[in-house]
Amino acid sequence: MTEFATPELDVVIPDDLAKPLDRLRDAASELGISLYLVGGPVRDWLLQRPLVDIDLLIANGNPKSIATLVRKGFGKDAKVREHPQFGTMSVEIGEHRVDLATLRKEKYPRPGALPVVSPGTLEDDLSRRDFSVNALALPLRKGGGEEPISVIDLGSGLVDLGESTLRVFHPRSFHDDPTRALRAARLAARLGFGLSRGARSALRDALRDGAFGGVSGDRLRREFIKLFTDCAVGGHPSIALVHLDKWHVLAALEPGLCTHASSRAPLRRLEKVLATPQWRVREHRPWVAGLCLWLSPLSAPLRRRTLARLGVRGDTSVRVLDFAKSCQRWIKELKGTRGRGAVDLVLAELDEDQLLALYATCEPLLRRRVVRWAAEDRDTRIPVSPRDLLNANLSGPVVGVALARIRAAYLNGEVANREEGLALAREILRRSEAGKRGRRPKDAGRN
Image 1 (spheres, rainbow, N blue to C red):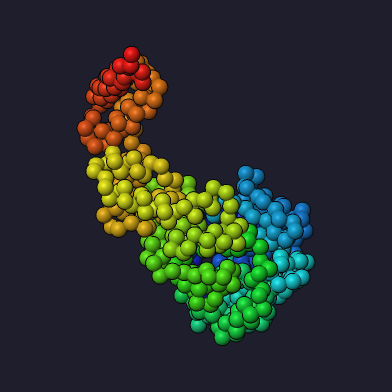
Image 2 (tube, rainbow, N blue to C red):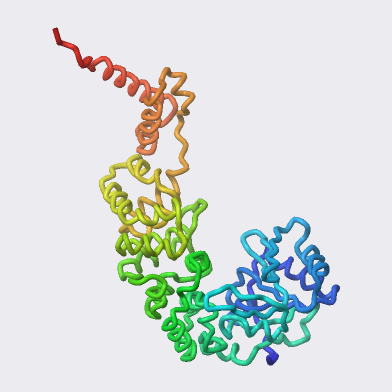
């Protein structure tokens, strides 16, 4: 393990993380605790990429001193979650997260199983990590400025970083934790890295030995969630899935599973709209939209088996399974729409995940309609309320019909205000009553 002095680099830390990180560093110095920035944040710092989340190692603190450290660094209102079985805790700050862990080493009881964690040294902690470029540590000390910045490297991380290479630490790395293959695909897609020759060989051996069969669906699903969530920080699920296909990982998860060529363009459009939203996106789950697009070209039985393998159940499973058929219907209806009110009737039934997936699937003209509806029409309030209609002597199902008609007319510019809306409602009521009077009883005319 070697320390390398590095030139001063500009690092972009989000404003809501910068001050807590400074306080945490100062508090660690006061308490005599050695604190290290470690893993992905060091990698991204050296690549001069913005930091999103922060991973910290605590080298010599007891539970009481660590609690004091967290309280001084983040305050009493911080959302702290402890994970004692792994010796870690996480602190949520706005949209960001700081993960803190004590030094540890891991032992895998069998391929694909969760590790057994025990206390370790800094070298133990770095060597248990997935790739050499993620096994870099940066001591955080109070003050600084005159001292050169030193990065602790087990031996090849800085070299591999310069060569854009993902290197594992030993030949059975993917046996121990097969989900490292999914993380490799994610990093390769986001950073433009490739697997080293040794990593490719280790992955082939793990595939040959069936190591992926021992990984639970919950763990796999969490990795795919990260894969699609990466869109917000420059990730490319479309490329990551191609890597996993080319490496034969997808087929190892479920026979026949692949990345169909027809899903790549929609996935790229999803990446763009998640990275640079075209409308104020409501609460959503990027991985659900991603699964809809990725799996829709595949056969229904294969989609069903894949979702079961990933532990996707309930309503989410139904939505992903039905997306291919539903999307065809929505596109057909959108193509036949005339006016903004008609578009509203089609899109109002979709949740945000379906809307994102539909947008990514559509041709340019329909995408513009989706954006206009989501950005302008979706939150439009019509000038007539249900109470107004009740006061106008409307009741029962006709109220819902009238509200829908008034909304469509308002979006189309055919109704401009409350008075015109109520006039349309009275006309709907008149026609409804006329229709009832015009109905003949079943026995009418019989003698």
